[in-house]
Image (cartoon, rainbow, N blue to C red; front, side, top):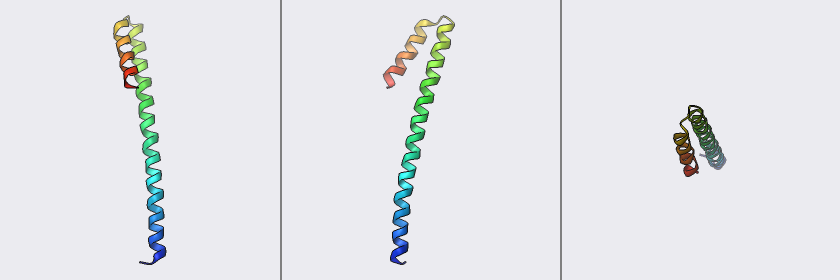
Length: 66
C-alpha cells in the first residue's frame, strides 16, 4: 500500500474512534436522564396513591445512584 493510503486509514480510524466515543457518551447520558425521569414519575405516582414511604424510598435510591 502507498504511504497516502496508510495515512488515510490512520486518519479515518482516529476520527471514527472519536465519533464512536462521542456517540456512546451521548447515549449513556441519555439513558441516565431517562432513568431519573422515570424513577421520579414512579415516585410521584406512588405518593399520589398514598404510598409516601415507598415514594420516599424510591427517591432515596435515586439520590444514592448519583
